[in-house]
Length: 116
Image 1 (cartoon, rainbow, N blue to C red):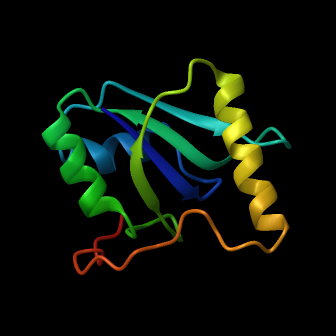
Image 2: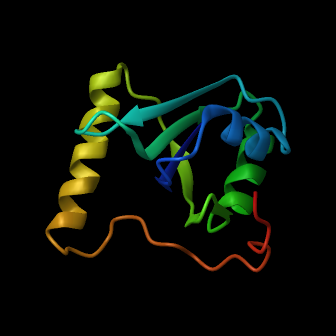
């Protein structure tokens, strides 16, 4: 199952995500997108092959702070290529720039006091 993680700090690494999501089960792959300016930013895709483990990770990690940013975590389908991932990032960034309501909002999770 594929998981989309948004609102990532530019300091977050694949290892950080592996450690955080690996607590829930096997992480098969992690892809962090590059923004327009070439640095890691805002969005990652994580593939967890066991659906039950992935759903637990989504429920628990949504709203959790990682390197100073509250994560927005949701079920996602893996784009076919990096260009698709970059396009999703660009669309998300444009919404933020237009002061439009965010597509992805933080939902309160009573267990979200966990920090990495």
